[in-house]
Length: 376
Image (cartoon, rainbow, N blue to C red; front, side, top):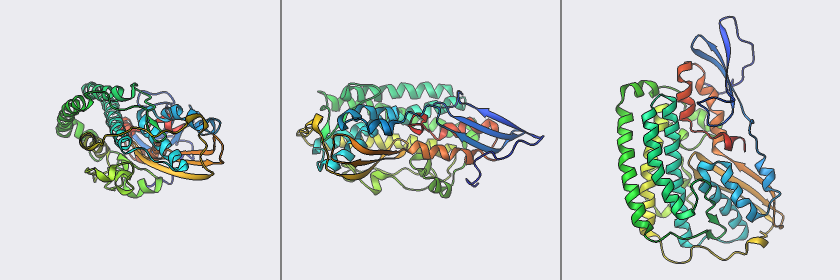
């Protein structure tokens, strides 16, 4: 498999047809157009066209004050709301020369990992509907409800959490949160393990996913793919481990990898990462120090020193980074976002070449992309 020819450069021959999937289609997590040149049931060429909901967020951010940008970061990808908040705050904190309080670092890790769990649960659930496993979708949404409730108890929101703040977080844990969280996480962990065993033993599911849509480590690296799709190829690349931030260097967890790079492996990585995230949160609840949850930073006159910063984080879909340039005013001079879903989307066309039409839904959904972030 190569990724060099991911555009349809010639009209279909008499034995081929050109099929348009999208920009509105049940298998898509948002509008994009997938053009497929097919010969019988085999895909010969594939081309991805994006930009149907382009929001121009980077230029919008350059016209807002640093504090006004905070709630807008949620909208880059709502399933990675906490990660978006955190990486933005860390970038501004570096420009300001401050750090979150010790307790705030743990609180950010807890919410980031809860965010990762709910994102994986919904991503796997939507994927299972695309392979005809509707019952598993219902299970995943049910389990996700417990995690979203834990996030809501901390942030006050179920979707766009807007939790991180320069130098800390918006608020502390509510009373009795630790016991409530440990109980809910224990139950979710047991259920997800059961679902994993079910999916790993179902003969029909295995035929639909094993050896299908294989992404190699070479192609993934060349296209900038990160997160679960990269780790499913055997590459142990996780920013929480290779470039620790917050308190990840004080926590014990495994970087989950699989070796085959197929549909099955990409989903398996996410299922196992849910268990690791639960373990991380349990450690944080045990180790978190007392003390203030934020520093005092005057929000409406925040003027970072002149300079530039590039900050990155391991969000649910891979490497999310932000590049900020400050000219000393209360607004960023330049703002750029490096999102994981954009790189993941580039890997879809080469994955489809040579596969069958019946496998398109499974392959596309297993990548767990986010069109909202792609078209930021």
